[in-house]
Image (cartoon, rainbow, N blue to C red):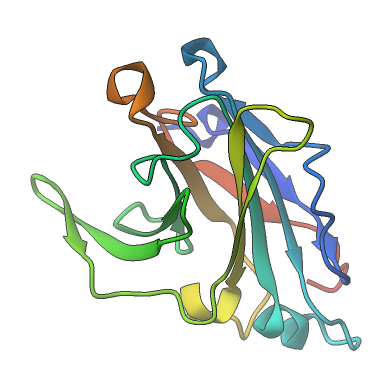
Length: 194
């Protein structure tokens, strides 16, 4: 499949904490189902002049604003799927529900689909759950995912990673949908030497 069919998301670098306001989402999906989900992404961490050392300490910050659904139900979930190699042979899945129960798994391609290894967990995962502001119905999942927990190849400049998002809701007949049919490319920007 030609790479031009994949969407590219440019992920900015932030030395200080990424704003909790989800003002410029990179991706919005699910609105036609009444379950609008907006996603903002950045990467952040201390920068001491060495871009390779900065990315070893960095975190991928993903904020998902989930409108509609049932924000009181523990069956309401969001999931982030990340392929740091880009070969589509395996991906990590990190998720949470509305009460802050996090989970992670590795999925490896087999001849008949993907096989789940649920023994993996994301070390030092930062996670915050909160209500949507302004009285809107919904919830926000704010992830800070350490690069070191999801990639073994941080001794060279970051390559392209692939990402996808999933939301599961008991509303709308148990809706489960992804941001797109395919993973999107993540292109990290902000440290010129990387």
